[in-house]
Length: 166
Image 1 (cartoon, rainbow, N blue to C red):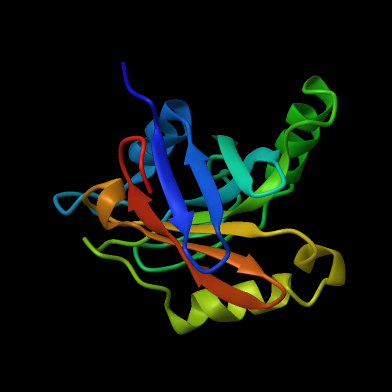
Image 2: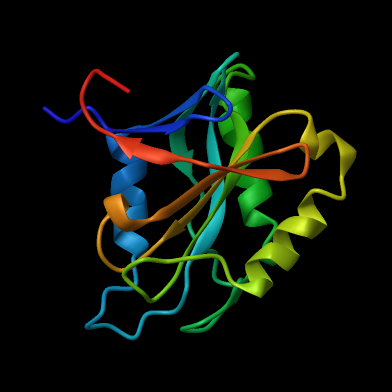
């Protein structure tokens, strides 16, 4: 029985829990080294608690999102529609908690385009009130992925931890 994945920000003393189902959905979109898949992108959906986020679901790429092997542009309103549906079904518990996308490399790091896209998001004042998870999935394993919390226009590193201790 798997227990998902835990991330921790030492600076914020903040935990992120990724459920097995969310990890599986990301795995389906990874750009494995032997494939020429386009980058995938979507939003992260989950619960916000006082010192933690719980990732429950993600939106999958939509047909009208612009995607190439090395770039993406999330255009579709389907991501928002999906979020609205999940939010309603959960009686407001599940909500937007971040952004994810893939990179065709084993140890992904944000590109200048990634930072530019996120800077557009943080120009909305309400966006900055609560931490948002940023996840770049590489073509290997979640242990090599790039994770960060964005809060008040600042990026906070997240480290993977396994087991019961931080």
